[in-house]
Picture 1: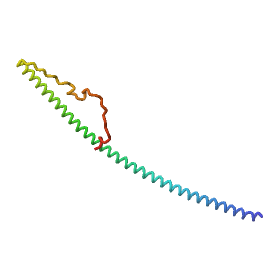
Picture 2: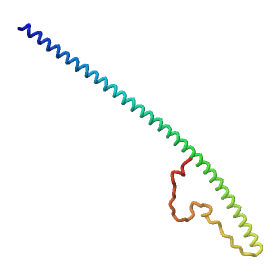
Picture 3: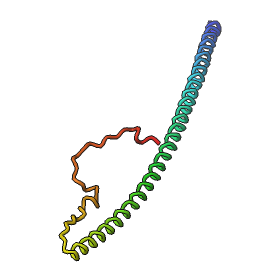
Length: 144
């Protein structure tokens, strides 16, 4: 009887090992498929990041160009302002000289001449008293 039970038990062990091998094979196949899907997701994520990187680099280039253009415009306007300030100083000096000559001529001829002084506000227009008005701007103003 022991010999009859042994083949039955080895058949049962064989079936158990076959089931174990089949589960192991299915698990390995499932793991391979899961790893493949994971690699695909990783590759897709990498492609999305590379696309975003390219887009951000392009935007960075555009903004750098805009900043450079604004800087050049600033320097141009600053140079123009310096020229205008020099012209104001020269014209003020010339006006003072003409006023002085006019006073001298008036005094020499016995005439009373009222020559108003140049208001400081005209020499410094940023200090002119003016009503507070909102400054309106739009994004279109910054287009180059």
